[in-house]
Image (cartoon, rainbow, N blue to C red):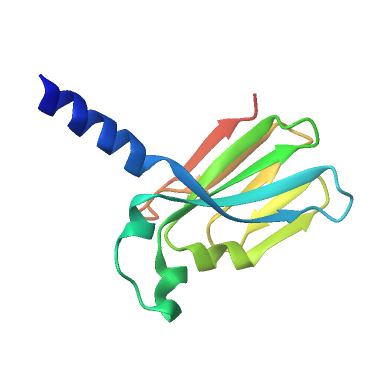
Length: 119
């Protein structure tokens, strides 16, 4: 029982996000937050490979409400984030449309687009 509990706690701890950086929108109304799982920080990596970790980019409004998150194959893909009229996009990954209330991104195999409404 203790082993199962400790294994579960360890798995939960290792999957917690660790913020890498933030990128505010030019108007200051939104912020993109790029995070990776804590597990990737415990594994040895050469300094020039730090951008190769899987990540998630989440956009929040000024009140801190999440407008959705999109998985990234690597942290370095977040460098392609562009703030556009009524939203944001990451080249070849996905986009948010704040005006129409949705975001969309390619699945891992790039076989179809996943679309979700912004809550």
